[in-house]
Image 1: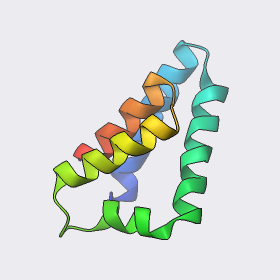
Image 2 (image 1 turned 90 degrees about the vertical axis):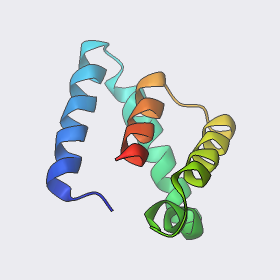
Image 3 (image 1 turned 60 degrees about the horizontal axis):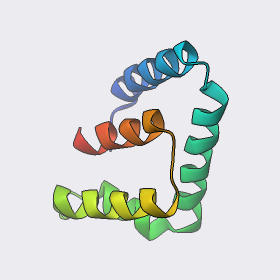
Length: 85
């Protein structure tokens, strides 16, 4: 799991870009949708939190989720950065 201080930096960067492009409402909606996915499917969240699961497997899962639930490029890139870190 990402420490709160680091997550805050990522969130601020995301917000800055979303505000610059004037799509903050859409990006917020995208992130709420993914939050709901994690709430409805706790096993998905466990996969991303697990150190035992290789990153390439997590990337495949994220790709599948993004194919099924397309997001703005900013939001999808944000999720990819979180996965990478």
